[in-house]
Image 1 (cartoon, rainbow, N blue to C red):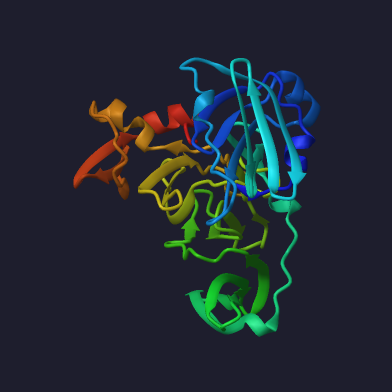
Image 2: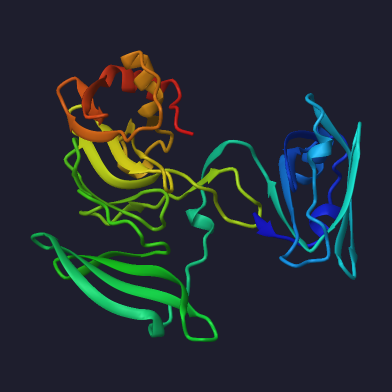
Length: 343
């Protein structure tokens, strides 16, 4: 959530909104159809807070719960000397309180967006004060990668480190000539097995320009495709939401299917699969393998690690709970072509 200003309440009409979550000091729900059309927002959530030793009492939203559907009549807010005076009125009850500050989350869509936000991004200006070193990696004969690492650090008044963020610039060189250069603005993942020998006879190199998404370059022509998904629904003030973090790549030349290992942030290991027929124009909708394990094994998937093992002649082999499970290539192709299940 974003720490917010009063216009996040005053500028929008909450009348007719449907509440689907009420917790002690917050509320979340769906804007009315009229407000969706007017603003483009589909969902809202608020968290109202008081500081330690504040003279304001902690808000209590529990009285708004009815056991059934809760519809908003109005949400109002005004700045006072003591903070923000807020009133939430539903069709059955009203709660009024003063909070010291609040967080809001206003979303422009529901679910997941596969829109590529990379073309809209502004490249960061990297200060040489942040520079921490350079490393050159030999990928193949004639192909090498030059990585320059930058780390921006924040310190408090006492000089204690309070935060850091890593950026890296990369130059892919072929026979000493620059083939392509890019910046990874969130360099937390080192891809395993990034070089791909495609069934078309072309060679591709995979890389990250962000924590999310995956990009590819043709190592002969330098033609490349950079992709960062808009991701899960998120607050309108942030450029993207969370999506699957790719850490390892496993291409099957016989089928032109590709499997990605990785995870969602702080989640269990997972495997996704997709169509890799055209690497520079690939379909970003992937099949989330854990979603179909129940269909294959007859057992409910409970969030265990799922790891890539290998490709076989007619199947993708993954491991869960120390057990190898085969997912047929025909099933993957069928589900990918009919609409993959990633979410």
